[in-house]
Image (cartoon, rainbow, N blue to C red; front, side):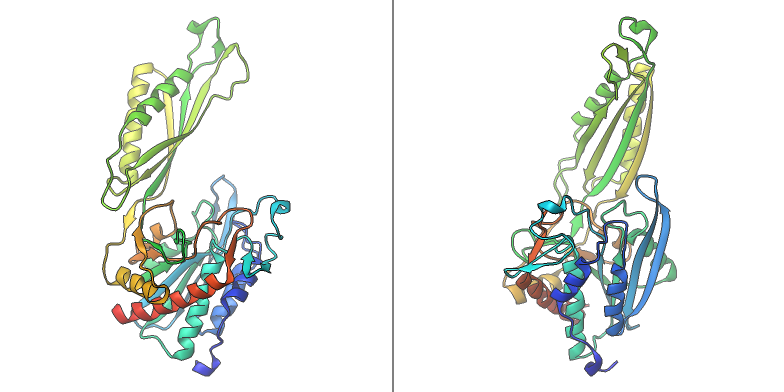
Length: 395
């Protein structure tokens, strides 16, 4: 493809086109089609990878994913992101409709503007500007999913597994999550804590409160176990990470009566853990603790677990430094390398290559009136362009 045939893409217009697609997870509604058409005009070979299976609430989901690559040579620099968005909430509370993509006073409003259709559009625009000037000394690729804001069972995780099985090599990856804290480019994410959810059920025996000898009350047993877990210090931190934390998110017996001992008591907890632990090791610990309380009380305790990803850290090196240098060259500030925040799809991509996150300021993500200044989209495009150029110089 000649330089003359490369269209220079406007990041603001592409962001608006994507926002106008109400791709509330897990629905795609044509968002991948919009992106695929733009990438095809830039000379990318696009592959759609759709996966089906049960969703996080047991319902059946079909997830659209896209892997696009331009070139066959190494190194292969990948951009990863997601076109699915969280629900908009009450539309009458928005200053403009959440999927209209209105620009007002130099600010673009809409669900996904920050998280993360704006980031995707900025990288596509940056790629178009790089290619309009000439070829890159390697390959460029995109890994885009429609299952990041949901349970993330049939999105990036399965695409990474498929690419690894095929022997596809990705040398480095930038995830376009809104990593900036207060100012564009003030922070990149080079690691994330792992996340483990656990569902705990204590099985007792229902009965009348006046005759406790005829019943087996699960409420004090769940309280004992939760206290035991909550009081345990998981660790004192890990270099570059805060201490791991266990948070009890609900304790419930579902008992509306005042004179009935309930038959069951349930609880749910989440552990955000640093590299001191693995999900499997924490599951073993939880099972042992529950087993001890079960032995002490005689009531059966049942546990279910879901580890959505282990902790990871991309160590300092040429890739991280190249990205920091590029941001500093364009914006005049050097981003802090951070591991704060929740989880992202970087936890899956780390199985293929070094990965970090660089994107817009995340102050309004998931909020009513999610928005991004138009000038910030243009600035991120300039940053991404310099990132592409600098990474290819260093890798």
